[in-house]
Image 1 (cartoon, rainbow, N blue to C red):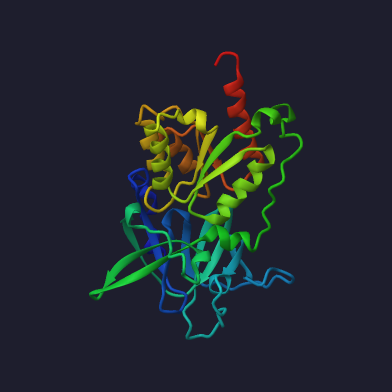
Image 2: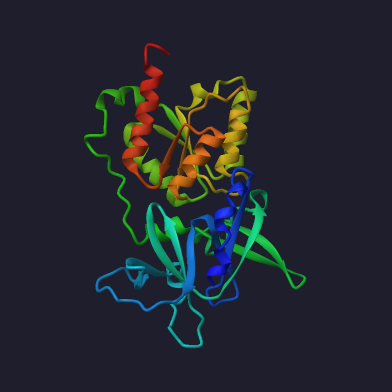
Length: 318
């Protein structure tokens, strides 16, 4: 099982090329689900768990992995399926992941394989799909001359329903002298997760900022281009853009690359706000030209970035 991921570290060249790799798995149902390989630390057979009294009902227990406690989430139950029963005939595996600076395991059924695909092949889920609330996107694979749908899990929503994310701002971070100048300015948020967009929106709206939302990099890029085509100055329209890294159609790295290579919008202040691992993203920030990097979800850091950007604009040297 661990051999499935033994080349993950060699795949960073996919990022920034508008490509990704997905780890496919099942939840002991016919559907095929997936998450981004870059969020996966390892895949193992289901270990012995310790029950935690009073924990969320989606938490099956805690696994001890190399001496570190890792909460295990029953992914079937978390997305609205009946929970795993623990039958001996029922295949159970643990996908250990790193999201939002925390490590957690997802209890799944069969773990299949990794596929390499382009973000242009990733589509938003149908609006009428019953489980769309737990999907960020879908894609397709061909198996035995049949086209199969792959459903990409919105892990941020799954985690947000277990962990209460606090959007309050620390008093020592908030610069009240800037609030009057903040009021009415606009920020563009680009993220395929409704949960993630709401977290950023709930934080920055406290500053009096107006929020413009886009669901993927292509939608955001088309919006920016439309402003330029109308003769508008992008940096006058928005204070900054806050973008996720992994999104359908166009990822955040490619979005940043395209912006930096368009003379009409190249000076836009861009912050990468992602749940992917910090050290990797810090390198990618420099490569594609983002101004700042934030590992989700940190309200105080979002506020600091917005305040720093405004201070820079208000500086007499500007």
